[in-house]
Image (cartoon, rainbow, N blue to C red; front, side, top):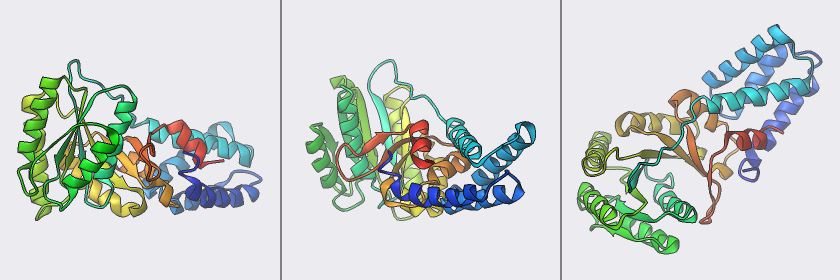
Amino acid sequence: MKQAVTRTRDSFSESIGSVLALTREVDESSLASLEQVLLAADIGSATAARVIENLRQRGLRQGIESGDDLKRLLKVELKAVLDGVATATVTPDAPPEVVMMVGVNGTGKTTTTGKLASFYRGQGRTVLLCAADTFRAAAIEQLEVWAARSEVPIIKTKTGGDPSAALYDACMAAKVRGTGVLIVDTAGRLHTKTDLMKELDKMRRTAEKLVPGAPHQTLLVMDATTGQNGLQQARLFTEAARVTGIVLTKLDGTAKGGIVLAIATELGLPVKFVGVGEKMEDLLEFDSGDFVEALVR
């Protein structure tokens, strides 16, 4: 995690350091400067305003005596934002646990699906992949490569086929085999956004009919480098696909990793996993404490 947020931390810490170096006492001027630092890291205006107001109230009640004190309390506030939307992942009583992967093309959704298969296998669980992104050229072949790397079986159909039919077959296979986790890669783009959302809703209902409580997780894959633009895309998926959590990819490629906090405030969703590189093991389970400690030094 420390390596992943290096670019964000370097610019963030340098800016905070400048604020703290000038802070003899914490006043409106130092809080305003700190708010600008938060905004520059893509934390978002709503999150920044909330954090600064909480720090202001703490200052009035208890006093904030130094720059070090301010930094310590900033960490507490940032962690509280993330913990405020955290949810426990509930594993169903009977297998399979169905995990649907959604998101626009280009965010790393299919790659992340393959890495997640490897993650669950590393936990000793049996995994089945479903290639239900039948609209993007080579998506099925790409997932087949990841299935081979992860050493997990895959259910697929032909390009242009019915994704809900592929999902039906995968659900039935997972039930018969007693597979622990079924991970479903879905389309990132159809002819229109409306088509895509209808298709995702149809798939959700198909899973629900075959497996009680499914999908148990719907993970929205977002690209950290798209920043605030990615939030707009995310809102559409959140409404249509009943998203339960976020997988944030390419966190290592941005100096604006504060988007993790903007997601919590503006989407009300927890980040469940972060992608921090190209290798199979470069998908980390998200931990708010590790993230805040890595971000603010």
